[in-house]
Length: 190
Image (tube, rainbow, N blue to C red; front, top):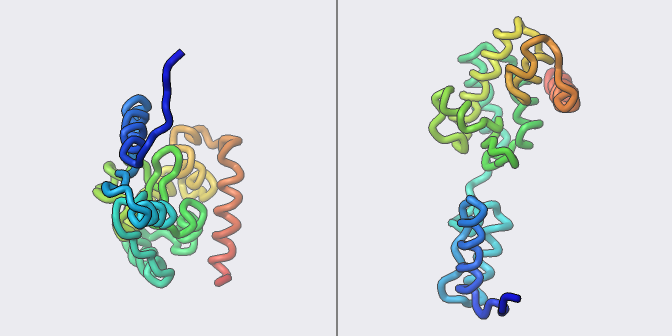
């Protein structure tokens, strides 16, 4: 049996977290407070509750009017319906510019890193780049699926290959329904 003792300081905990991250292949999200003080620990906790993981100040939230402006600008460039793009943003991230999904999708429109790169988005957490890229991607999908909004939405969520034969995967149907419901609300100004 291994002799395992309890960590005696925050430094020990940091070392354990680092080793766990190495073994799991994940990045260690935050450095432990160097001085081990209660104030430093509280700052670390505040970072977690603000979504920064203790790595710095919380990002400034994106004001709803700014999101609306970004959507309008992106849609002017792509020809997308702003209400549809807004519905995608609402369902993908809940208007959270720093959102990250469990599978790695990022930002307001939850762009996967590979998709973001293909769209020329260098920082998927930058609201302007994210919305512009996401709107371009949605416009591409609408074109690919001949304007069929439910198929384009399913492709946005599940990937274009998943709906290539005109069928929405079962695991994507609730997403499509939810976005279409939001779309109807936004189109009617609700």
